[in-house]
Every structure is written in structure tokens, then in C-alpha cells.
Image (tube, rainbow, N blue to C red; front, side, top):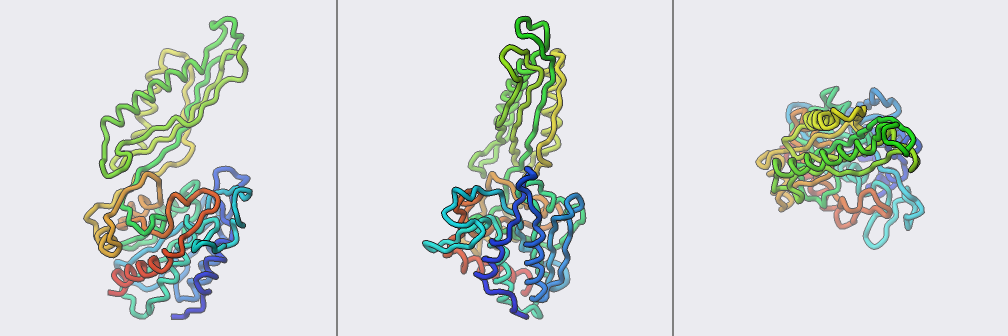
Length: 384
């Protein structure tokens, strides 16, 4: 195998130095193509077959599917190439300059999760490509931190195909086999503004939102009672009332009011059914108010992930790490890969409590263990 790709620290340096912020706010959003092109060059040098997949609705962004070897089975090592926005003034060092201090590597995406791709490449170098008996796929995706458009595009194209997958989100190298889903919804009520001296001059949307809040809190209690999974630290679905705004002046009847909520269902719950239930309950509650009800999804939403506790890749990861597979509350691209018939776990270096904040870092003492762990996974699923 040709090992002309840069050495590990140079790979990580270049990945961190290449901005690829994704955001629902256009002023922060950037293309990830420079990162994709960088990875494609390195992986092509290692003999991988390269496919760059521009996103249908965002052609300036792309997924990368790099494949080494052929045949059934195989292993996907997957990571997203985008980062969240950043507040440079709160960083102790340049977010785009990989900086080593106190045995940690600082930089935007160092934990979440550009470093994983560099470490995966390093693990690949431990193997002779001529000895692969099943395909090894390195998958780099777009927009995980915002729209999930990259993962959706993969499902729509029904690729890549492999029997097993590891998504290298920061888990401290502990295997994760399940997580909650998420939907974020905007509920908008339209009434009629008017002079506040007489309520009959209008129809107060804020009064109506009080009914919405009451119904949502009642539904939240019912969800908590009906659904429980003790494998999760918070063992029930959560519904957060996150943002509300209505009206514009004390002496005007409020004509419009908007509420934003976040709902995180457990595995086995359907995000589409939750939206339908929400609409039915709120429309029924508001039926006699004369207010106009409208709900819009703020994000596409992600279904819960669930890989069975006795799945082959879960048991292998537990054996190799010495950790029983766990669950988390945050979302990943795991359910998208699972939906294509791929047994998927989440497992990578770094810690989630370092993600999405200033001075994000990767502990250097996790570098060699990550390479060794991924190398063993490659050996089991692609060589043996």
C-alpha cells in the first residue's frame, strides 16, 4: 500500500485548518468541499476508489465514499466533516490551528469530529490492501451539525453498503448502541390585534398560546408516563419549551404568538406520529378560539437510533474495549446507516462534553488506543 499521505499530526493539522462550518444561519454556513477534496486526495493515494457525492439540494457540499476492496460484508468508518460555528474571542488559541498543550490537541473539530478521519486513515495504513477479503469504506459526510442533508442523501442513494459501521463521534472510545431522536417545531398562532382597552376588539394569540402550553405540558406528562427505557440516563422522552415570542406593545391585543419546542423520543417512537399527534391535540384544544394554528418543522428531525444489544458489532466492540455498550441523548447519523441494513455503533476518541464549545480538544492519550482499536476492527471485518 502506498503510504504517501501526510503523517498523522500533519493530517490533523490540515483538517483543522480547513474551515467547514455548517449552520442553519446562512451567515455562518460554509462549504465542506475543501475538506472532502483533502480526504479524497489522501485516500486515493492509499488506493481507495473515490466517489464524491454532491448534495442534491446543496451542490456546494458533498459526501465522500472511499472504498478499498470488494465483496460482501465489510466495514464503514464514518465521520462528518462539518463543525459548528465558533466564538473566536473565547478561545485561548486559534480555532483553526492545531495547538498542543498539556497533552491535548486543541482546535475546532478536534473532538467533534475531524480527528477521527485522520486516525481512521492511520489505522488503514496498518493493513496490506491486498489482504482485504471484504470492503473497507471510509465515509465522510456533510451537514451533520445542521440539516443532516448528507446522511439523507446517502439513504436516498442507498449507499454505501456494508455489513458493519462505526461512526467516530466522541464517546471516550466507549461503544454507543442507541440514542434518542429529535424534532424541533415552531407553533404559530394568528389572532387579531386591536386596542387593548376592549378585548372584543381583537383575538389574543397570547391567550391562545396559554392553551397550547397547557396542552403540551399535559402531553409531556403522558409521554413520560407511557414510555420508559431504563438504559437511558433520562429514561423517558423529553419535551422542552425553548422559545416564545408574541405581540409588540402592552396596549395592543396580541395578534401573533410563536413557540419553539424540542422533543426527543426514545427508540421505538416515530417522529412522524409524534408530529401528527401534536397537531391533532393542539387543533382540538384551539377549536373554539377562532385562532389560526400553524406548525412548521425547524429541522427535518432525526429518528432514534437502536442497534440491538446482541448485535455482532456491539459484542465485538464490547470485547475489544472492555466497556458495555451505552446509550446517549444526543443525535448522530447512526439511524440513517442502520436504515440501510448496516449494523452501526457510535465510538470514537474525545468526549462529548468538549464538543460545541471554545477550546475544544482531543486528549493525546486516546490517539494510539483509537488507532489500535480501529485496526483491530478492520482486521476482524475486512481481513479475517
